[in-house]
Structure formats: C-alpha cells, structure tokens
Image (cartoon, one colour):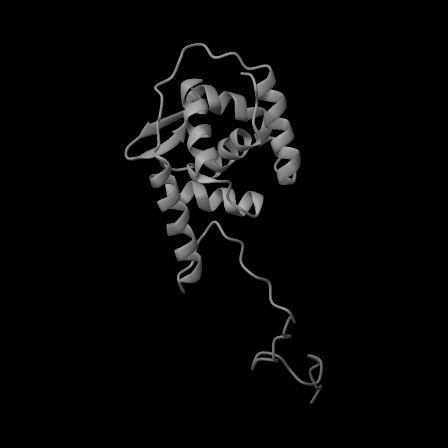
Length: 164
C-alpha cells in the first residue's frame, strides 16, 4: 500500500479503538481520533482516508457503522501486543505493518461526503460541551487525594484491646 499517509494510520487505530464490540458510528471514530491524536484531522483528509483504506480492503461498512475487515485485524494483531505503547509508537508500528501489506482483493469503496464527516466532527465537539459522559475521553484525575475519614470500624487507640 503506497503511499502511506498519517491520516490513514490514525483512522485505522481510531477505528480499531471505536469498533471493538460493534461497528462504530462515524462520530465515535472521530471521538477516538480526538482521544488518540489530541485533535481531529480535516474532514477532507478523513474522507480521503476512508476511501483509500476501503479500496485496499482494510475498512468495511457493517450494520450502519464502520469496522476493520479481517485483513485489517490480522494487520493490527502485531500492534495489539504493544498495549503499553504510546500513540506515536503504535502509529509507527502500524506504518511498518502497512509498508509490507499487499491487498489480496480490492474492497468496496466507501465514499463519504465531506459534509457527513464534518457533521460527525461537529457532533463530537457538541457532545464534548454537553454534561454527558464519553467513554472514549479519559477521566480527569483529582488534584488532591482526600484521605478517608475513619469509620466506625476503626478504633481511635490503634486497634489495641484493653485487658480488663
């Protein structure tokens, strides 16, 4: 698969993250890309990446969402073992796997209009502003850890019993 664009790598990793249990909607893929990269690439670039990856047989459409094909899951199997790796290291590992990848057959081309991708990006940004929770966004850590107050089960004298 030549040439390999950065957006392709990010889209593969975001789709793998968003579609673990079921085919992911476009807004979920955008949320995963935002979580991984810190920002979402342009809608034109994302639409072009969908077209490239689908024609190479790496992304497919199923049940109203998008998922990785079995060939892409094989490709990503080498990357899965590096669970503690940071995102740039994972993207580099995916790039190395894609460099040696030759498509077995042409896939069904997914042509997404840029308006649809832009609407998914806007939906994700609107969801971030809402008070709801997104499971893809990391939870903020507390600034100061509060020590638990002693409960009724805890003795004030250190747990020693008197011998009376």
